[in-house]
Picture: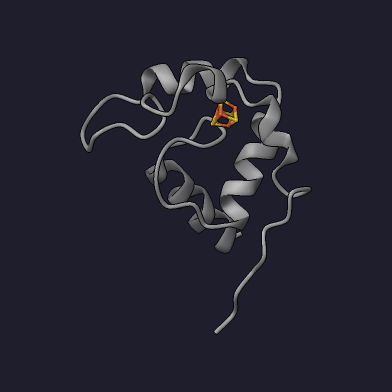
Amino acid sequence: MHIEAITATDIAWQEQALCAQTGADFFFPEPGSSVREAKRICGLCAIRSTCLEYALIHDERFGVWGGLSEKERMQLRRAEENW
Ligand code: SF4
């Protein structure tokens, strides 16, 4: 079993997260709910690329990260695997 430690440095960027100011509801909506508002906020976020990279590296399965939904991150991961 591989256990990866997440250090404070790894997540220091989250202090600049716009979603931390708006609350998590937009970013972790009920299944079938719109993620449009979350994506709009991500589009204004200065750390979007760092957030997306973190989500991909840590295989975040739920919610909107870096402006992409779960399904979009999965598609991106598959496209990168086939590159
Ligand atoms: S890109 Fe979106 S999910 Fe990521 S930190 Fe910014 S607002 Fe939050």
